[in-house]
Length: 280
Image (cartoon, rainbow, N blue to C red; front, side, top):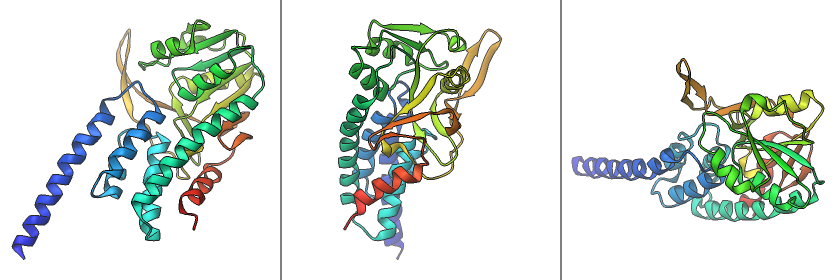
């Protein structure tokens, strides 16, 4: 009996050590967004001897990053159904690839804005700007402080970019304010700090507002409290949330892999994903 307990304890220690090392790579990343995180998290969970535990660990790395919560919910649903977790993860990976391709089709169906305002860096926004390169003349890019992504965004979005301070998002003329989403929850959408001022300012001025994102970022649970990070000010450091909690009412349009939609709750998107993964 004692030998069995010792073997179990050693196995738990080994799992903890492996999981801690795997999660540290996620913790160290501050530039890449939700798409990168879900790809890495899938690798971690799929190779773990305890997928549910691993999924719980990775979702704690960046509270508010929707795909990590969705990954946990899918693993938990597979366990509850008695389904093969490995097969569920393979289907999730397949769905993610399909969603990215479908999102490109939805982006193409969008009209042609002349001037766009956005914030920080988003691969979904990058794809939108690339698809509309023939008509977008200028991109006003709010920095998102604190954050390390403005330089990466400026390089990716091209020569049309004009970087502006977050506080100046209401001072320029544009016909579309668009952000990617890190997560969509029952009560709030999450994206980089600076997203809410941009969207609220545009809304107040009658400018169209949109979020462009894949459906696997929608988690039908209450929004968590986002991680807080230190931001330097002339009077010293102050803690601010990594993500803005954005009321869905500020959006006019969701540009998603399921089409161009009026803002919809996350359960609509999750139901599509769950059906795809667990269809008999």
